[in-house]
Image 1: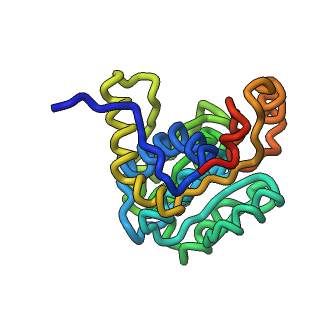
Image 2: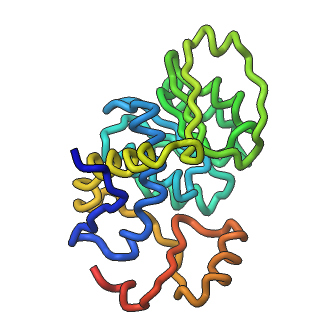
Length: 236
């Protein structure tokens, strides 16, 4: 059996900019949502920090793979409006509204089956309250905090699954398997235009410092792409 490769073919139907925006975030989001959370068609999904690259990738994958209701959280009215434009069922600006109340209202009180979380400790307890019975919480990042308290009664009564994912402790073969799993499931929807990533802006590779400085302002929505050749921005 041939060893798995870290190469993914670029469909003729997408641009090089979209291709550049694909591997890192979509492989990570696929590993979280499909491999670890085992999302099934019709299930409800909550994506925290949804305007991030991984958040948007998780939303696109959930839509393409037949999720039921998809709920997203953000801390900005502007980003909330842009998320709504993606066709989501519910977008919660957690700077203004209570996450738990809004999520339960959006799911008729049942809670969500899957949460893809990049925030961590500051929303951990709220996330547990948002989960349905036998719900799965997959933590990717800890933008808010790396520590949290847990009510074990909630874990016990709801029979929850708490899952942490990272590539840092995986062997090279495991990382390559993640790439190939994403390619297996996502090449067809990618080619069909179902996984288009919002591109906030592009920079020539010579302006990488400016791109990094802009990224630190947290004003971007979607991906910032560096171009080694400006002609690639228009090439399909």
